[in-house]
Length: 223
Ligand code: NAI
Image (cartoon, rainbow, N blue to C red; front, side, top):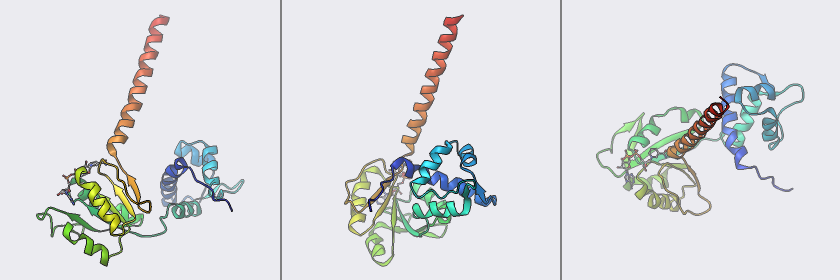
């Protein structure tokens, strides 16, 4: 059978569906029509149907979607039916903030250790998660199953650390350092760059500002 390729745009929308359905579940909503879901999410109903049809639909004509079932099926597609052990490399502002965020555990991501080169941080712990010296990393990876490494260390150090992690068997890198890596194909990297998101916001703000100026200009001309 031909394997269906799911577009990146669809994959990008799935976490949002998952989050909305999770909110509905918390409110004990049992079922929802694609129209209602579309109104809440501000996505067209046909977009929702199209997106979910990629995975076999899940909906029933005249019934809509069973919220619990759809939530759990999307969770499976996103791999959230598994548990992931995570380590954080770089225990500075961002690394500590991530370690402090307990909600990742609710999604199945468990931070097991934080590593840093700064000996002054060693022995400290955040929410019971110990900060260890980088020298211990290789040994730690031999004796603990780790699925994902979050990189919250300086850009200049990130590529070397990422390549060591790949060599020691890490398959998932959640990269916050503003740099790209050249890693073996079996290593999956997800980059998170808040500055890029801010640039998108500034673009949208400047487009709106231009539209407003054009509108004001037209109004002036009509007077
Ligand atoms: P920070 O200076 O507070 O923390 C960096 C930590 O990394 C320090 O504790 C330092 O000792 C440690 N470190 C240095 N070299 C290391 C190595 N080779 N191995 C392990 N640990 C090492 O910096 P902050 O603010 O936490 O930022 C960390 C990184 O995240 C930077 O690359 C920064 O540009 C990036 N960043 C990215 C954001 C994003 O949206 N992607 C947002 C904020 C920061």
